[in-house]
Every structure is written in structure tokens, then in C-alpha cells.
Image 1: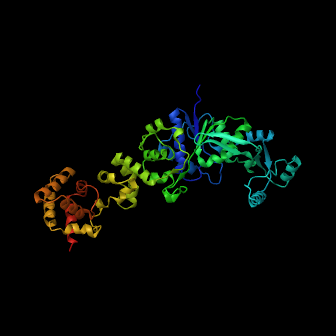
Image 2: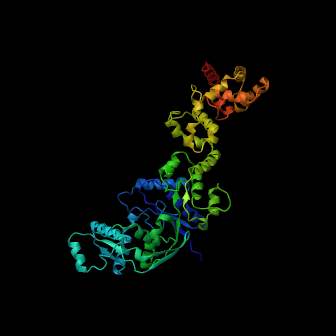
Amino acid sequence: MVQEIRVRFAPSPTGPFHIGGARSALFNWLLARKTGGKLILRIEDTDLERSSRESEENIKEALRWLGINWDEGIDVGGPCGPYRQTERLGLYQEYTRRLLADGKAYECFCTEAELEAERQAMFDKGETPRYGGRCARLTEAEREEFRAAGRKPAIRFRVPENRQIVFHDLVRGTVAFDSNGIGDFVIVKSDGIPVYNYAVVLDDALMRITHVIRAEEHLSNTPRQILIYEALGFDKPEFGHISLILGKDRTKMSKRHGATSVEQYRSLGYLPEAIVNFLALLGWSPEGEQELFSVVELIRQFSLERVAKNPAVFDIDKLNWINAHYIRKASPELVLDLALPHLQAAGYVTEHLAAEKREWLVKVVAAVQEYISYAAQVVDHVDVFFNDRFEFESPEAAETLRDPDIPRVMSAFREKLAALPDLEPGGVQAVLKSITKELKVGGKKVYMPVRVALTGRMHGPDLANIIPLIGRERALERIAYSLSKLG
């Protein structure tokens, strides 16, 4: 019988949900969906000072927005709960007692000052700092003496000496670590809270996780975790460590490379399907040259064999290109909903929209939709629909209205626009074409001057879309205003 693949995403709720975490969640989800396996969502909240339910909710909301659903875990339950580490402390204590009884762990009474002095001494000698084993062989009398002095012990794992810890990484191939370079490490702090490397092993083992797919930064934790698996007699999962995400300048991803949290991209009006498409390409290479993928296509094509070990580069231009593709396919109603907070912040619209105003705004958005990469950019393109008093964007723009043919062009345009029975794009386009034929002038001598007279700009949305949206009266007033400024 083929073993069911069980993967997990186990974030710490200590702040905004970052792009790197979203990519890890996505790769696990894609593997689960590709194989018919299960994704478990577990919350690692043992950092009591920094963890918050608010951050946990932010993570869940971001995952749902991206379309990443989970089969077991917080909110949905399952047979391996509870799914928050702070609700599993009793389980951890049970296995800690077993390790202590078997001599595979011991109490450490060293103070932070003593440990720091030891680290500094090893550093001064050019050695890699690690715990020297001061408490590894304390007698019961010595332990009692420390307790009587008020010292609370941490629990350290006893690392076997002279071991090569070798495992096959699904992304990186064979990886080996020397146990002598690790040193006995803390698994439970003096306050009774387990550290990451200990709790994660117990959780993954008890939740029957078969594949641990996570960021490269956890690679150095793996030998410690393998030793704990072995000490407790647990079956080890398969490990796969996906690459770092770097900025375009090949340095570690940071705010200067663009927004770093999923929520920031959502608030800017990026679409979830575009973010998913982009994240999938951060470290995974599909067969062929295709770059735009539906979720169904991603699930069908995804495999760990095509996940690269080299760092992935976060290219904001590529994200914008992908998102622009999805924006163009989206309904103007959806794009307006995403853009509304930004239009309100810019003062273009009020918070409460009348139905008629909303219907007009949908048409405005449709007119500029092909020019934007994400919904917040709508603000940069709609001034021509709102502002009847504008300056020419450049001397070159103003110069287009000084051509000798302009009086004839504008007179014909005003006359035909005033007589047009229905102000709709097809009729406006017909008017503009008819002027070029009747006056026997090139299109550039009609379309460009009319655009500048109506907007002050030489480029922008199609005139046939602009004019019906600003209306006949406003269009005629704008032309008169522009011509009056020429002096």
C-alpha cells in the first residue's frame, strides 16, 4: 500500500505573513494536492512574548485569500490535535521525561552569564562556539545543590560523539553533518517551554508528517532534529529545503525590494491567482517556457524534482507583469472594488457611493484597466475623468494646439460632438474619423490635439472612452478652457 503523503505548514504567529512563508505553504499545498495527500496547518506559538492571535488570524486569512486550504489543523480539527504548540505542553513533558530516564537528555543549571563566558572563550580561541558539557555528568547531590540555590534547569539533549549525520535532501541531495560540531543543545528552556528543534520533531512525528518541505534556513537544524527522531525511536520524514529568496540585487529579501508581506500586496490590489502564479516560479521550474499558470495547471505540473537549490530572485517587475495579465482578465467591477480604498484616499470618491456613481466608476476603470499592473495604480490614470481644470503636461503638449489647422479641427469637433445624438464610443470614433476625411488632414492632427485639449496629456485612455465618460458639456468646456490658455 502506498503511504499517504502528509505535509505541514507550521508558521510562528509573530508578525506579518511574509512572502517567503507563503511560498513554503504553497509548495506544501501543491505537493499535497498533486499526490492526493493532506496538508496540516499547525501554529508554532511557543515564543510567548511575540506570538499573538491577531498574527495567527492574519496568517489564516492570507492563506485563504491565496486559495491555500488545509485538511487538518487549527479551525478544521483532525485526529492529531491540538494544533497549537502551547496546547501540547503536556505531550512534550511526557517525552522529555522519557529522554531524561534513558540518559539521552540531562538537566543543565548553567546561567546565561556562564554560557556567554564559555562562548566568548571558544570564540577567542578560534573555535566554533558550542556547549562544552559542563552539566553533562552532574551528580544528584550537585543537582540538588543548584536547586537549593534557586537555579531552574533547562533540559539539554545529549549529542552522541563522532557521528556523521547523513540524510538525503529532496532538493539538495546528500547532506552530511559532524555531530562533534553541534554540542549538547537545549530542548526545553528553564521556564518549561520546549525550543523549536524539539517541539517540531514531536509535532511532526505525532502528526505523522511524511515530508518536511521548508526554507533553506532550516537546513542547519536538521541534524539536531534527526538525532531526536532517533533517540525517541520515531520514523524520520523526508526533508526538502527550498532556496532562499533574494532581491534583484542578489541580497537577502527586504522592504527595499518591494512589499514583503502578503497583506501589503493584497491591499495594493494584486490578485491572489497572480501571487500564487508568481510564488510558484520562485524556486520551481516548469517544463518548457510557460510562465502563466492556472492553479489546476500548477497542481498538475508541480514536482519537487524541479525545485532548484539555487536562490530564487524576487523580481517585482515580473510579478507586475504577471498581475497585469490577471488584471486585464478580471471584471472592471472587481478591479474597482480593489481600487476603491485608493480612490477614496486620493479624494476622488467618497466612502458611500450612489449606484449611478458606481456604475460610472466601473466604466472609468474599464477605460484604464489595460494600463495598470495592480489596482492601486488606477489612481494614477483617472485624473483625466475628474479634473476639468488642468495644466498641459509639457510645452510639447501645448504646442500641438498651435498648429494652423487647429481652429478648423476644433470647430468641426465641437459642432459634430454637439450634434451627436448618442454619446457612446462607436459614435465618438466615427466623429473623429469623419473630421480627418472632411478636412483632409492626418489622424495625428485630429486625435492628438483633441486629446490634449480634453486632458492636457499626449497619451492615455482611448478618446472614444474618455469623451462619453466626461460627457458632452464637460468636453466642450474643456476644449474652450484649453484654447483660452494659449493666449
